Amino acid sequence: MAIYLSKLHEKNKSQNSVNLPPMSEQQNQNVFAMDHKKMRWLILVFGLLVYASFSCKKEKDYRDEFTGNFTFTVMEEFWMVGQPTVYDTFTYDGTIRRYAAGDEEIDLCGEDTALIPSRSITIHYMDKIIYNTNDGLIISEVTEDGQLITKGGHHYYHYGEFIGEDSISFAVENLGSLGGGWDYKVLGKKK
Image 1 (cartoon, helix red, strand yellow):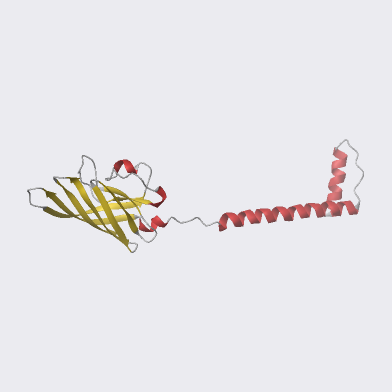
Image 2 (cartoon, one colour):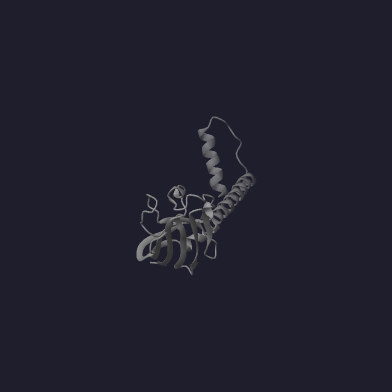
């Protein structure tokens, strides 16, 4: 290596107009040693960067274990003052997903808009018009152990929980007004 550097120095000397004194064997070894130290340092830094980029684990969002496609069995109760209560049961293929900005505009509960987005999920459990919109969608905060945080207002109330990672049971109640309304009991099973 020292001979190569010496020849390289001689070649550069002949190509440049600046006359440099020839490098001694000791100087060639010092240049090689300095380059070797720099190379070892660069390899070490590069290796640390590669290690750091691959070893950093992306933190998993706990809500992901509760999301997916679900088949919901919806038990509907419609009541009106002075009229018999009407019951209906139907199934709906819907979804549970992480909350996304803007979901609150289509949430069935428009009264309670306080939520923590990083803890919230959006549940689309039916296609049914109640208040002149598609109201089969609720937003709920969920705990790491699968409890839906109770949410309510004057004409809305929901509560429930996940049963394991693949089932959910919840209720949406008190929809309507003083003279009548709807209550829903919902069971969901992940597909």
